[in-house]
Image 1: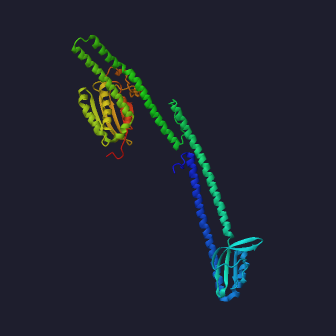
Image 2: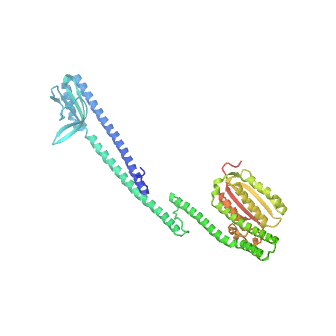
Image 3: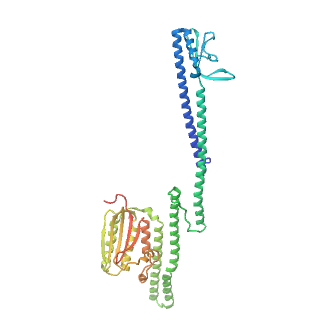
Length: 454
């Protein structure tokens, strides 16, 4: 069965067109049958009525009365299309001019009579046996039925042919359009395979299925281009930023080999080398964590979580260190801020932002953590009153290994905001950096789970 089922768009469209034509033909046949039987039933009713009338006349007036009535009715036969036969017991014709032999009593669908000039008429007839062995035949011309049948056959045949031609023509046209659109997509995909990663699917702005497919494919290509770009950036940045810790590690080892003279000196050198190695391992772990989040596989483990207790827990954990460093911590949290996400990732996001404030702002800075509902979304804000970030550098600071000149003297690899951005993207959140004059505010808008606001 699968071998005969068409697999191409043109084949499927043609098969559907033929199937619809056959269905239309079946419907036409049903209409013909019902109409034909209805007309024949009317003809039978007319014959039966005529036969009843003539039989009643015979019973009331005998043979002379029925013969006279048949003569009068035959005078109008050209209009009525009726024919009659009245034979006696021996088969002698008593009345009626129908040129046919009287059939056996009962209904006969086809009674042929000789009309002369080599023509034969066809009638539908009812034969009755009267008293004294008389035979009465009442017939009605079937030519109107046959003409109606011919007209219906012609009409339905024309409809079937028209539907078949239109269906096959439409299938060919549809197949051509689909092949052309798929051809464009295929050509673009082939160009991308050949190395032109900037190519995108052509859109016509009609919001059709193909247009939406092109949009989806373009988003996928943009995402792939972003990942490839990140990979290239990571490769370049790792090669650049690892030189410093590796050079320091090499320096420590060289000094140990050339200057250490006792066990304690070697121990100190090994301790420094271990610290340098741990820095390198921390760098790779951070990079792997960011890459893992950017694959979006973390979404498979998302559940409904309430942001309010997560923000409270992080604030309580950092409050002693913040107060000891002279920072002021303020919180303003709305309840019922339910989103789909991962508690540990959201906690990591907040921890990175709070640590950035402690690392890059002076003592006395005010740190604010706020959580609210707005326009069907959950808005999380982390704001400070520190020196802030220049607007021209805000897009740069969320990239891997991005470090501002004023932060070069502080420890770190410039991966904190890159990790924050990856976590936000994984949670379907938008991230925005704005001024607080003075200071910086980093805001996130998460989709709010329906019905979560109490």
